Structure formats: structure tokens, C-alpha cells
Image 1: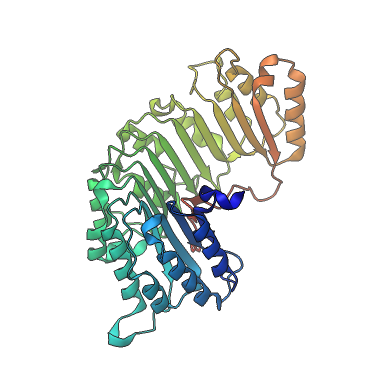
Image 2: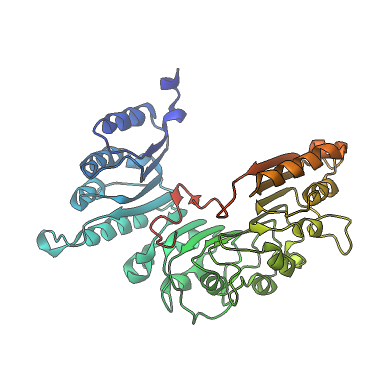
Length: 421
């Protein structure tokens, strides 16, 4: 029965270069019929050096169906491919229906081909050709080479891109790429991981992208993130996610209040996560009352939580109610100390069974005994409203604080190749 369902075969992920996999890929391509294809070649744990030729063979098979590609993504950094083979596989593809493109290989930079061309030259030539001929292209992933190649930058259809993903990017001083973002009239989602130091001389809040709704930033440090955020003016932003590795180091706090003051957005979701934060509640109070976050529906905070943060989020507590429309709350690396019950009372204050909306509360506890105490307090509370809450308590273990450190977006890791992680 599955062989007759073309939809089941039209999304294909290749993560292995073993000799039998070209036959499997051909089976998938045949059974997909005439459907549009989503093809993703990405790093997997089972690649070995000799797999390069097999992957090239699979690229040749995929190229025969390029007219059906709606998504073609290749990011193979752990496997060194024969560059001439990749070029030969893709040099004549036609991609009239391509919407999403990612294109990144690992090649031998020291090899020079006949005529003096390098594999890098062939790589850029093929990539630029794919971009220029794909008139429906809306989603792109790009890497740090973009600021060094004016021809490549001129080929990017900035005005019609809606999704842009930039893994492990170093932005140059007076970046031509950043300047081109001013032409993004349709950009809705920008996801970027910053590599190393970022330039400090960019004009503050000069680059407006009124169309942008979703911004995800992963930074080596808050100083790098602050520099990046201060470049933009994003008045229509609705979803902001920031992950750093040093958010609360003295002298380098995240400039969240400053950028919100300038952007004046109405955020619907906010994720602030840092691997080294020791007292999240000290930073929390600086932005929790900001007008830009009072319409939040989803809040995720990652870093060490004390018991003080939950009374602040409790509706009906002294002072104005904060973020009254929250429906999903995720608190990572919770450490309550000797107190318990604050998380439960916060959930109780926000549970309204007559609203038709179900509150979701997630909490990741460092200490098992604190999870047990809070769970017991919740269960003994006896209020029927708590039965309507989607409660997800987890014990993540003591010792080094644990956040989810793998960032997958649009099929690829955003931190692969970053030495800081």
C-alpha cells in the first residue's frame, strides 16, 4: 500500500554514504512519481572517507529529477567530497520549482584542476547558477563566504526571500551583506549563529526590516549578540529567541531593554537562554515589566532559576500583573532552594478553565528532591483548576546546568563547526 502513496516518498533525507544507499535513493525517487521533491543531504554519524564517491553518485541520481525539486539542501561538513564529481553532478541541473536552497560542502582547498580552477571556484559557480535560475526561490541558507563574493551577493534575490538562515557566520566590518538586508521586503524569519568577534562600528538601529516577524540569534557571547541586535530596527517583530554562553557575566548584560525601547514591538513569544547564567531572576526583573512583552503567549527562560521568579509571574500578586496572556511557560534549570509551592501558585493564578485555553507549564529541575516536593505541593493543593494545566516536570540532574545545546533549524545544526561549543 505504501508504494502507491507518492506523498510518502517525496521527502528524502540522505545521512549515509554506504554502497547500498544509491539503490535506496533511486527507489524513493521512482516511488515519488511526479510529486515535488524535498531533498536534504546532511552529516550523519556513519559517514567514512570512502563514502564521498557514493554521495556523488546519489547527487547524480537526484540531479536527474531537478525539475521536481522544491527544496534542495546540502550541508556536508564532516565528509570531504570529490569536488569535480559534485560539479559534474550539478552543473546542468534545471530548477524551475526550487523554493528552498542550502548549499555547503567540504572540499580540498589545495587541489587545482586543469585550467587553474579550484574546487572553491566550481562550488561558487554552481551555487550562483542555482540561485540565479531558481525564480521561485524564497528560502536560503548561507555561510560566511557570502561577504567575500560580490557576484554571489548580487545573485541573491533579497527582495523576495521570506526565510534566511545563517549558520556560524562572521559578519565583516561595513558588511555588504547587512547592507543588502535593507532590500528584504518579504523577509519573515531570520535565524543566525554568530562566530567569534563581531564588528563594533555598525550604526545603531539604522537597518530597518519592517517585514521581519521571527528572529533567532545564537551568540558566542552577549557582547556579540548586542552588537548584532543594535544594527536593526524591527518594529513588527513577534518572536524573539536568544541563546548565549555568557549572558550574565559582569559588564556584558544582554541589552534587551535597550533594543525593545528602540524597536517597540509587540512580542508574542520570547526565549532567553544562557548556559552560564547563575541568577536569572536578577536579570528577569529588568525586562519583565517592559510594554513589549506584556502580550506574550509563550515564555521560555533558560538559566538558573531561584524561587523568586515565580511570584513575580503570579497574577494577583502585589503590583501590576505581568504578561497576563501567557499560555505556555517553560522554565529551564530550576533550583528552588528551601522554598516550594511558588511554581504551583503561579500556575494556579494563570489557570482559567472558562477561557477555553489550556495553560502549559514546563519545568526542568536540577535536584530530584525539589521536583518531588513541588509535585507533592501541586497534587495536594486540591484545586480543580490545576487539573486543567498541562504540567511537565522533569529532573535533568545536578552538576553542570543543562540546556538543550543542539540547535536545529531548517534541517541543519546552527552550531556545527563552532569551537566554542
